Length: 218
Image (cartoon, rainbow, N blue to C red):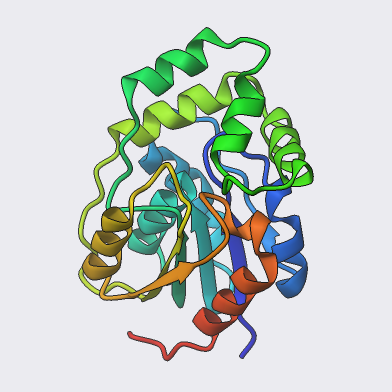
């Protein structure tokens, strides 16, 4: 049976940074709705997910939290959760920085989501990704992420948790907690940070493919 791969990008993302990965699977990219809570994001997206066969949800950061909520609302074959923990800490300092704006804000945020060795092309791709959404969407998304507390799933689907080893936003121990709570596996990814789908798309596609072939848990 053919899997339906659905990508849920992170906060403030239009999904442009996922383009290379999406082409491996003819995947759908669903940018997150600009609404004030993670649960409402899932409520608005669930009708896109329910009709699809053997859904593999691939969520990054805030998108990973929305994927958890979607797995509570409808049947999901597998989850690939990227750059995420069991909830994600968002500091008031970061929210204040985003609220203040400034000419360097987007470039600074784009670079912070990549490994220190990231190429200028990757930084520019993330800048363009952020710029594809309304300028206030990132702030609203990160506020919703700050306020979100996950709830346990009684029967979680097969789950991979992908950790970029240079991730400066979500620490390793948070990724480990997410994998443990989901009865899943942690996947370390070298030479990338908070955006392994952009920095190492072929490797990201490899692990999504592994999730597609996972046995059904329920």
